[in-house]
Image (tube, rainbow, N blue to C red; front, top):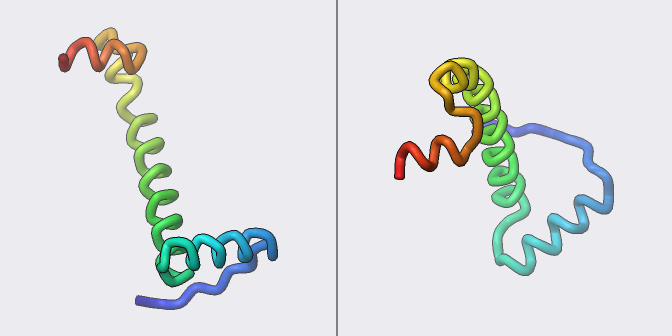
Length: 71
């Protein structure tokens, strides 16, 4: 693992420390999880953007269209 230094508002730092205490997890674990989720969400949006034109060409215009097809 490597280190990364970031500057965050004091209010965010305090909230992370509160979460840390309530969840009995180190602050670093909470921050790592937040970053993992953010990166995963961005990857999903990127992939969705790439696939969307192909899906639309097949008539999949909404999430409901997809759910209807796979149900």
